Each structure stands twice: as C-alpha cells, then as structure tokens.
Length: 290
Image (cartoon, rainbow, N blue to C red; front, side, top):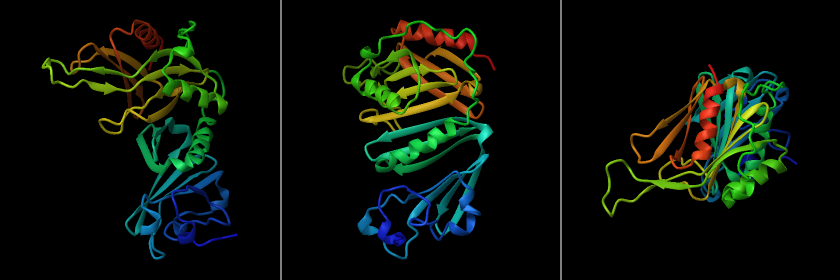
C-alpha cells in the first residue's frame, strides 16, 4: 500500500516501486523508470523529527539500465545528474562507519560518491553486485600473478576476519594474498616523547580471476576514523593499469602502495617490516602492465 513520502521517510533506502514512487523533485528527470534494472532513492541525512511534509526529503536517485549508471542528486530545489557507462566502470567501493555509509563508483573520468545510512546497506550491496556482474566474464588475472599459499586467514585481526566471512556469505570468491593489521607510524623527523603516532588502516589484499579486492578496517574518510569502520573495494583486473611500491617520505619505516586506475589512484600503506606483504605487492607490480 502506497504511503506518503513524508510518512515513509526515515534512514531507509527504498527501491522505486508502486509503494515508494520517485520523489516529486526527481520524477521529471527520470524517464521510463520501468526500464531500469535497479532504481532506488536515498534520503536526506536529517532526523525524522525535523522532516516536514513540504520538504524535499531525498538527496539521490540511483538507477542502472541496460548499459548506464545514472545518479541524480538534489541541489537545493534543482537536480544534477551524472551518467556512467557500465563499460567504463573501473571499480566500486563501500565504506561504512557506524551509521555512515559512502558508496563510490570509479570510472575512466574519475569517481562519483553517494552517502547513505547503513541501516540500508543491503540495497547498496545489491547495487555493487550488479556492477561487479558487468566486469568481463572471462578470467582476466594477469599472467605471472603470485599464486602462493598466502597467509592463513586465522592470522587476520578479528575486524578484518569478519569482513572476509561476510564476503563468503555473499558468495564472493577470493584468495588471500597478504595481510596487514592496523598499525601506527611517526612522521619523519618527529622524535619528541609527546609525539603521537598516526594510525593506519589494516588491509587484506585479495583476488579472484576477475578482480582485485581490498578489505580495510577501514581507510578513514578523515583523520581518526580508522576504528569501527570497514571498507570493501573491488577493481576489475582489466582496469588496473599499474602498481607502485615506494618508501614514504612523510612517515618512518612506511611503504606506500599505489594502484593506478584510468581515472585515479587507490593507495594503501604498510610498515617496511611486513616482508611477506611487501614481497607479494612487488611481485604483483612486476606482472601488472598498462
């Protein structure tokens, strides 16, 4: 039974259907909504008690049709839109910390992000799974990719181990290649006893035949957010243009690992002492070519 937009409003992401129609602000912009394989709306991040019937209560409408992702966003009383051809998707990412969620789509021209409440994370996972299904169907892992035993999964810290468990429950296949627990590093040249080391996210490096995967715990959106957050990133092998492993000039005994995509770069960090992870990443760098 259809309910009014105001009565239905809350932190939930709704699929567009008869009971939950397009918001009035977005309706003129979305042609043939029935043609979309997936079409959903994301609410504004405001408390329910502050919502009023005369407000535009949704910030985004996101749709996937036969060959394009379309993202409409509210800008005051107007709507802006972005169209990303599915063939140009170079990666997807979900970041979650408590009730804050950020979904990012990487493409050949950059990246586009939408925020959401994690009470509706299942809808965003469905969105990611739909995009991942568009990656090349055949095996595209680079020749010479290291295929050693890798670390035992039980050695991963519990936060990361639980993320691996969740991936398996979703049917996502992977091989664990390297593991880096959460760690800290001091900025170069700062040796005072009151200098507080900066925390870095823990990272699991995974892969399967079609994609390279990162699990983080989790890469912070801003300083100090590493704890209690989680991040999943998927990059099709066909989009990975190169991997570089370099010593950091900003932090002591810190190595930076950059993964080059057509529209940008993903970065992870690890201490120089993690020789097993360094060995894998350097071997990966040697077999990934533009």
